[in-house]
Image (cartoon, rainbow over all chains, first blue to last red; front, side, top):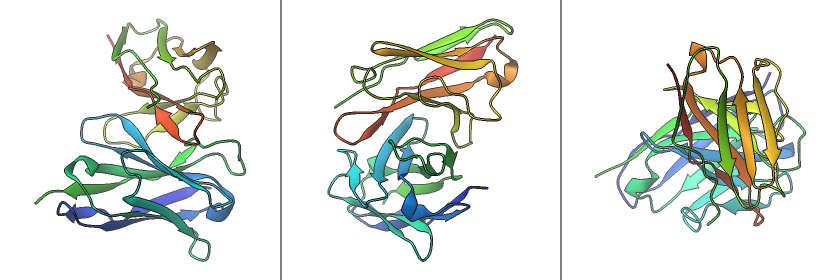
Amino acid sequence: EVQLVESGGGLVQPGGSLRLSCAASGFTVSSNYMSWVRQAPGKGLEWVSVIYNGDSTFYADSVKGRFTISRDSSENTLYLQMNSLRPEDMGVYYCAVPFTGYNSGWYGADWGQGTLVTVSS
Amino acid sequence: SYELTQPPSVSVSPGQTARITCSGDALPKHYAYWYQQKPGQAPVLVIYKDSERPSGIPERFSGSSSGTTVTLIISGVQAEDEADYYCQSADSSGTYVFGTGTKVTVL
């Protein structure tokens, strides 16, 4: 059974940094496409970043140059390093993965419960 | 930037059919996916690859595709189907996008 557990959210001042983690079980993080998706309070879903099994990475224009997606095979964990945080980055951050072994594009077959990021002074 | 456009809201009586559209220029080239999200919960995949239904999703959920528009169809709507629904697809630059979201209200 696939399980995703996010952590690392919290309160940070504008301009600050946070690193989110997504601990995976039931599949191998390094063999699957994985994305971060966020949702601002009362707003819709926004795709943030993807990492492919060949380690290619892509970012939404809104976070490019500030956020970095990565993974640790030994920990079977996905990360999102967020720098230069802005109030508009505030929201719930989810990690999500397609059905195991699907490598023709990303979509969210399984999701974590999300971790809340608050950016405020 | 690439956008997927959905109607903000759809209202439907129990037992009737709800149709939610999602329009985007790149939809003929990339699969569409549909998610259901209830308040305070993570999204749940209800349709993948335009029209495939994951195991555990009721048969009343189906998807179709025609040109630059994809449609989520909920046949025989039930009260428990009241939720926000989002489409999602890829663009041609390696990135992904969600639709604007549709709130389904069961009257």
